[in-house]
Image (spheres, rainbow, N blue to C red):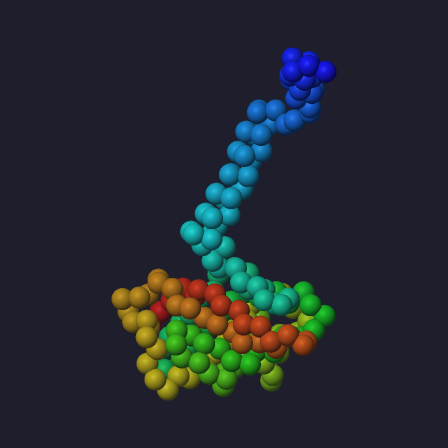
Length: 169
C-alpha cells in the first residue's frame, strides 16, 4: 500500500465516524448553563430563605418574632411528615440561646416540647430572656433575626435555621 492510499483511507475513515453535531453540542451547553445560572440565583438571592428543613421537620412559610419587655415570641408554620415526633431541645434567637421555653401548637399550650408526628400548622415558642437580644430595636422592626431550633427527631439531632421577621419591639 502506498502513501496516497493510506491518506485516502484515513480521510474516509474519519469522515465515516459518528459524532455529535455542533448544533446539539451548543444546545446541551445552553441547557447546562441555564440550569447552573438558576441554581446560583436561588442560593445568591435566598429565594428559598424562608424554607428550612432538617430531618423530616420542615419550616414552611413566614416566621416572625415579637419582643415585649423581656419576653420573646417566635411563631412559625411547621410540618412534621415523619412517623416520629420532633422534640425541640433549644432555641436561639439572635445570639441568645435557651432551653427553657413554652411551646404552643395551633395556639394551645403544650406540656412537652414535642411536635407530634404528622403535625402541620402553627407553632409558637415563648421565653423570657435575661439579657438584651442584639437586633431587637425599634429601628429593626421589619428586619430579620436569625432563629435556630435544636431538635431531636428519632435518632437524628439536626438544627434548623431560618430568618424571622421582627414584628414589634
